[in-house]
Length: 559
Picture 1 (cartoon, rainbow, N blue to C red):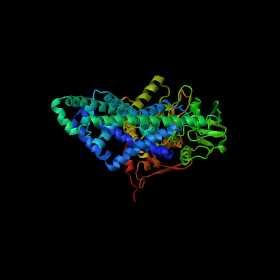
Picture 2: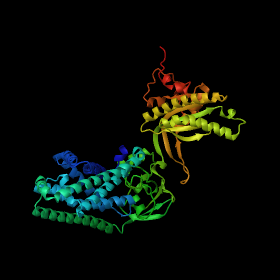
Picture 3: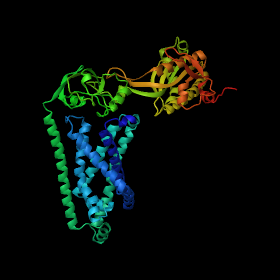
Picture 4: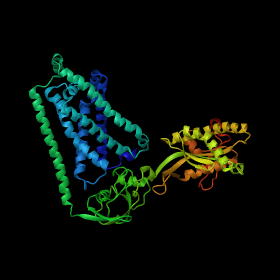
């Protein structure tokens, strides 16, 4: 979670204010959507919402977030060195610029009218007033523009996290459902309220209930709206003028940067290296959007590193997290002022840009290594078809225990396999691995009974369970790079499996995995093992039959 808040104080303020506004928009859309059920429910939810938004502290928080978010966006836009940017970023900026213009009429005829003319701006008044009018169509567009702008920002902020990536299909569904729900509620109540407004028998009561503005009041609101639009255009023009003046002032000041694996480019002093790359059409990875969090834009500065400004604490923390060398920097953070020669650590492939996960992720997870005992001698002289048939039957019997516990098969190794348990935290991963091992033991016993009815000898297996640091990433050519797990944890799990044969047991569980699963080690009969290729002895719990694992974990040493 800490890496989500890496960046400058302005970036943190932009995220924090954006989250406040996102919450407001979300509950506002839910409020409108309740019109599908009834006007009463719609307005009761509005009352509850306005207890916060129209209170002193709530209003201060909301409008401070609005001014901060909009102000920082314009400030960032004015200070840009180039308008070259990814499509998603350009779309988000355009949508963000459209929002205040689309919102102005609605804001003036509700919040401002409430303050100036004591208008009772209930949902019934708003929906009936604008239904089947140009303003109604504008507000429907506003719903979609605001929601898409918010969703892009939220996704670009959270996409570097594992839990967000796993739930992307859910978020897409919700992102589609919520505005559809709001528009449906608006349609239902808009039709009903509009009919009541045009009914002479009901309009008088409605006008009294909502304190309907006079024609003079509506004219005043229209005047305020027009002046508000002019103010917005003036602010936007000032932003564009600031960008243009800065662009003109720096046009003659340029610095050259040479890529070891690419061309030589030039850019204005003050631009980040990432901005220079984009301005020159050079592909440069930046999974977090250039916010200094993902490190995929990092470069090794071969020449000119001593002339660069020192890294900020946020940049130092990001580089330290990936054990980057001293001359590595983040392209989104450095602003070259003198010539430099750099090497992109991650260069997008001309055919396919690799996903963020492909670049390598460091995690603490549990692994299960399994191997069948005596397979070579057992299948000697058999036809290849018979060998494959036996292996498939065996895997059909035991693999459901792994997948059912939340594990996945990383690879099959002839008569064995390597499974990984990618849960949200080490404890859940360790417990899933223990559950899978027990399930495999029980499944093997059942499978051996079937073999006995066929007159075949029972199968024997060895399982090694271990938990530790892993690096997961795609290794290989860009078009043929399967996911691979590397690290000492893989070797340790494999060596534990190998020791099961020496000890005459089906399962060895490392103490590290037991600790991660919050299983007390006191009283368990652990064995210290010296494993080939492992620098230190590994304590492990031997289990004669994997199916009896729960009983083994309950054993205590006798006094």
